[in-house]
Image (cartoon, rainbow over all chains, first blue to last red; front, side, top):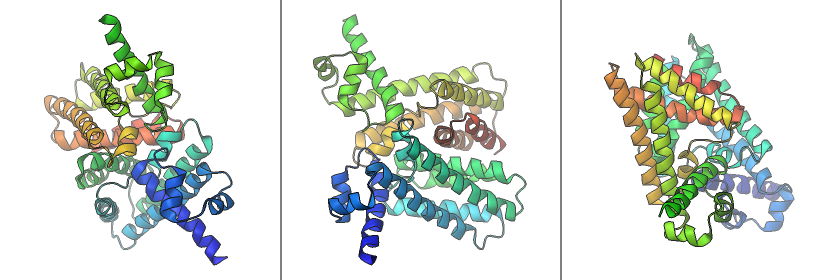
Length: 184
Length: 184
């Protein structure tokens, strides 16, 4: 059982990283199998719905990773500003350590598959909502006067930062996005 | 000559729209030829560098379209806020009229091809810089105290809005992104 579940998790993590770097359509199933070392039979055993089903699992897994980023950044924060700056720094650190190559785990899948695939769009929406609600919760707990709007503004700014940072090979866009959302 | 140049332009506009809707790798050359009605020979005549060269031309063309959006929105604006709100409205109108399917003409190409293709990354960067500089120019002319930071914050927010709006099938994210950047 353990081996089976490891194979599944390895497929999910490999796919998540490849989608972040090369996009959904740019990542062939053969590459996912090669990089994860999973046999084809194992893939179809765990994901009878094929690559789309794997993409949903990959988004769910990455989503929890980002949610943990958010919660860690805000864990000891004495104000929303401090937590938001820590989050921006963590995302920038992560992105820089991938040499500016691993983008948002949801963006490229969404941009490549909506409107053709409703399940993938709905999963992307669920992930965005999860992040926004996590940010909103921290904003509310820390007494921010406009928790919902600030959470949405920060999330959108960070998504834009991920794009601009990728084009520029720079971590600075994350700082600017956080500053913009905090000053609002 | 006119016919030749029309064929080139038709290829560029068709590719731009398809990349916006289906992403770079999700748009096969055969679909571009089918939708544009251009013969294969014409494609390789105009784009000897293949699909990558067409993608650069498509980004350049779309880029001018957005720049015109920006300049039109700010043309008679008496303040940066008025211009930015008009821009957000125009982008939301455009996106809504495509039934929330035509995203940023640069984002998906960038996310799918960087870091593998340096020419495409550089073109995406040139386009982002062009938009930021256009916004910065209007901010400066209209007496905004922080023209550069506001222009970058607004651009990133609008990119994030394009993503969230696509997941939500809603035009509201554009309003929130503009409000966030204006309040900063």
